[in-house]
Length: 108
Image (cartoon, one colour):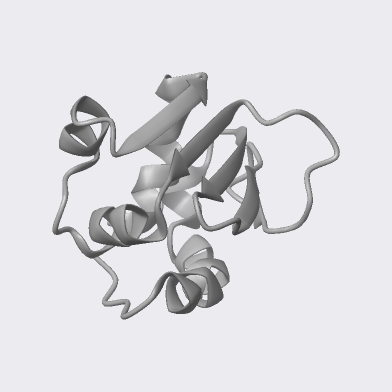
């Protein structure tokens, strides 16, 4: 798991993480929107060739993840499992939850 002190530092590292995960992401695709209770929004698109873009989506996201910044950071840091976060309703997901597998691979 990446060592991130803040959600901001994680977001800044996302392009490098995506480049390192390119082979694992190949064959996956999806458009994601991360929303925090504090108003931060990050949109990510994974393309079938493994490329990842971090810019406003030009389509509806396949999956939207909503959480507080502290809960999202706990998942990113590995202090809270994604499954437990979902069960405890600390993270809410709308859309195609199965697409999250590709996005979670950025954390490995």
